[in-house]
Length: 237
Image (cartoon, rainbow, N blue to C red; front, side):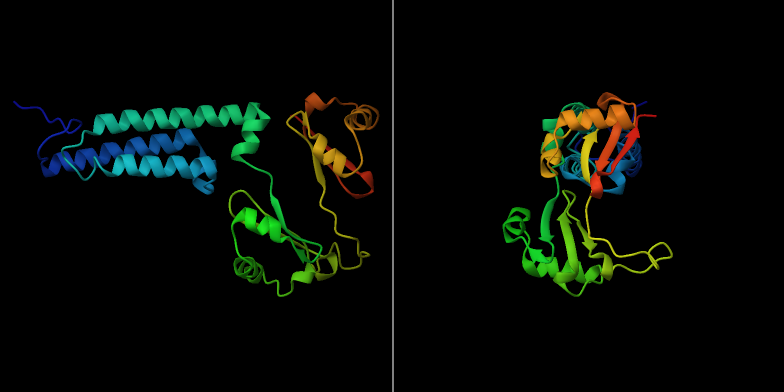
C-alpha cells in the first residue's frame, strides 16, 4: 500500500494530501505564533514585521505548489523563529541591540511647534501628521504639548492640561504645566541621557534611591522622574 507523503515535493497532490498539508501548515503556524508570544499578535513591531513577512512568504509557496516540499519550509520557518526568539532575548539583555530594534520615540510636536527635522526622520508628511491629530480629535497644533512618533508607527499625543477632557480628579484641581516624566531606570539600567536632560547625574540618582527608597538601581524595574524632581520607583517583584 502506497503511503501518503505530502511533506515532500511531488508532481501532483490529491485532495486529501492538499488538505493534510494545509492542516499541518496551520498547526505549525499556530505553534510558531505561540512561541513568538502574544506581543507579536497584538502589535507588529520592526522585528515582528520582518519575521511575519518571511514566514508568510515561505509557507505560502508549498501550500500552493505541489513540487515544493513542506518539510523544508517547516525547517526554515523553525530556524527563523528560533533566531527571532534569540534576538528578543539578546535585546532584553543588551541595551544597544534593544535600542536598534526599539528606538526611542521621536518628538514631532513640542509645545505647539512642529519639529520638521524629526518629521523627515520618521518619513511622514505634515498632512499625515494632521490626519493623525484629527483622529485624536485635535483640531489645533498649538493645543499639543507633545506628540511622539513611536517606533511601532503610531503617534502619542499629549495636550496641554487646559485642553484635556475634564474628569472628577481634575474638575477642581488647579492647572499644571505639562511635563512628561523622564524614564531614568529600566530593568536595573540607568539612562544617563535622560538624567542629563533634567540636570542630574547617576550619583544623585543612586543617593536618592538609597536615602528615600532604600533600594539600589539593580533592584529597580522602572524609575521615572517627574516635575518637582518627584522620583517614582517600581522595584522588581
